Length: 337
Image (cartoon, rainbow, N blue to C red; front, side, top):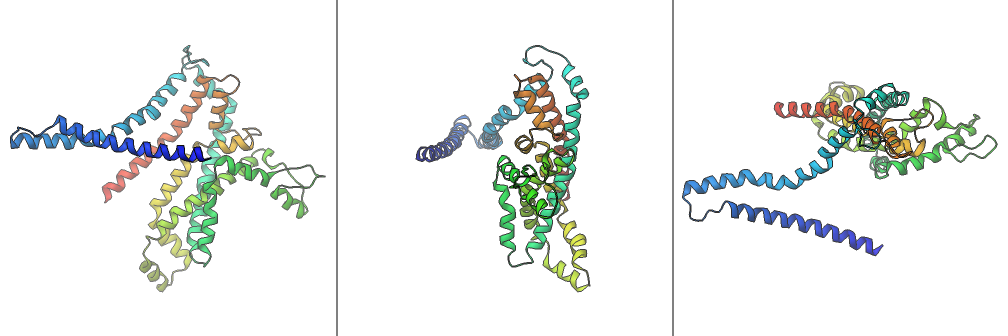
């Protein structure tokens, strides 16, 4: 344990030291390349402009290199592999894409992904907004916010393990240790293997992600609601507006930009959802999603890098419209200012 802590501290020190050395070295390099010695005033100004123009790009160079290594090159390699066989060596043309279009598993995964996209961002945003509004009206609101935010500190796999105990199923003659089944039996019902029930089991898995992301949405909305003018709210109350009218006609319109950001952020998380499905069902009983299917084809049964890369491209293509729309919206807001 001590060795791990010391290793982590050493890594931090080395990282910060490397950044400082790069900063100092970059400045020294610019001073050396564009020295002001024995030059006229006009030449000095020209060199100053060159230094200032080059300095930001020199500081951005490490980030651009990392962007290329960890983003641009993997995208290129994924596209290349999607046109090759399972070994990644022999070209097969569009055969992997024809297989993907005709494969019923991918159709099932796409359907489930769409279902996740409709349900999870909506419920997370709604619950987060309601908690953000209501928690500030009670004296124990801070405690409630802390408890609701706590799942954000848990990994998706850890959350899945917790919810396995919620959905746990034992035979009808056995004592139920799953919270949901124990409650159903207590109320006179019959215990169920909830995560094996077709169609509805996807909603039981979605509940886990909603539980996690509600805390994220709540924190962002709480900060956004503080920007709503108290004078505006008081004026609306004096004019006879109800709390529901104030919420929908004043609060929501003023934080609409934040709502959209939260919605799109959770949407991107949903498109990449993998851990929960893998830990809870491994895609069985009709719960398959694209990311888990990609993992199966890429790494299991010997692996098929061609088909796995093809599924990965489907996920990337699904993310692109959201990113483009976010960039367009950001530019519109910048122009409006």
